[in-house]
Amino acid sequence: MPDDLSHSPYAAASAPVPPRDRTGLAIFLMCAVSFIFALQDGFSRVLASHYPPVLIVMLRYWVFAVFVIALVSRQPGGLQRAIRTRRPLTQIARGVILALEVVLMIEAFVRLGLIETHAVFSVYPLLVAALSGPVLGERVGWRRWTAIAIGFCGILVILDPGSGVISVNALLPFGAALMFALYGLLTRHVSRDDPAMVSFFWTGISGAVAVTLVGIWDWQWLAPMDWVWMGCLCACGMLSHYLMIRSYELAEASALQPFAYTQLVWVSFIGVWLFNETLRSNVVIGAAIVVAAGLFTLWRQRKKAA
Image (cartoon, rainbow, N blue to C red; front, side, top):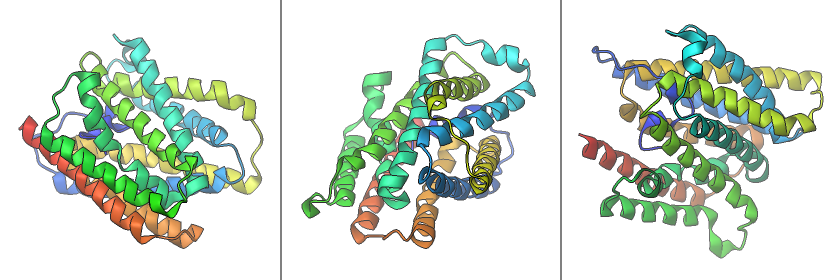
């Protein structure tokens, strides 16, 4: 995960931390969010087995856009304030990058499975640390560079190059991780000029417009039962967004970040139980290395900030 949860797709709607410490409840909510995210991925894989991923993302973003508009309308200044941004091109780029990242992830679910996709995707906090220098001009010390190198060794363990089974499909979750890292860094960049709710609004609206321009050409009606799965996917999406926003209101993002990794555990259960995926030992070991390296970079980032 990113060095700071404000890089998450939905962290832009977080509110300032209240004086009262309710970190325990916030951690519980973050764990619940991670579980719901895992369910979303399961629903996405079911649908992507029969429909183009871009169609699934388009329908999902339509609901997300309605959710964003409804949420922003209740904030001070409403939609008129949310539309005003000092960095429109960067905000649009953020939304487009995130939408494309979701499409790649769903495609990877079908080709690689949930477990291996998330195992590779877990490298993205290391990519955030590596790119924070060239993108934001931040200094990355030798300790974090060492953690980044160790994390990439973990990716090699996951991919097991000696087995001869590496394919171009493995580039899908890595590409998604790279885009999510870039999205997080751009979010940090625009936060210097735009309030959080403005970024949240532009994330949903620009992403919905971009994916519609591409996905509408793949339009097809879903089967009756598949509309049920799509409804579950959208319902989980709105619930997870709301709970994540609530968790950010209760505790600092940096305190919640490590618990977002529990999604990898839930995804593994769902992948094995529902999709008959195999939890290979090299994937477990490699994912553990990557997560440990990511947690170390989070710890160094928090210590440096302190």
